Length: 72
Image (cartoon, rainbow, N blue to C red):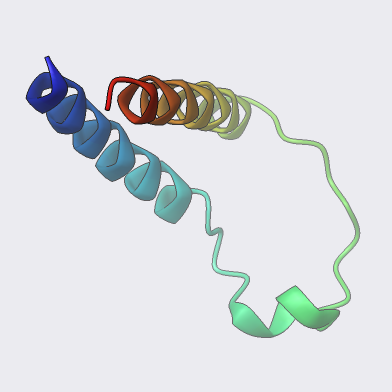
């Protein structure tokens, strides 16, 4: 059971990483500290879907990690 949880957790982590990389939008690291000066825009279409899928996968990752921790 513990091994299955670990494998599923790794798959979810890789999926989260991929989705986060897809959301980059070419802003670069400099904009993280206030650079860029772009105005805030709402997410539409596929950006909204990838954001929601990412949030759901992060919650799943957290729950799987808690379950795995409690099974020790």
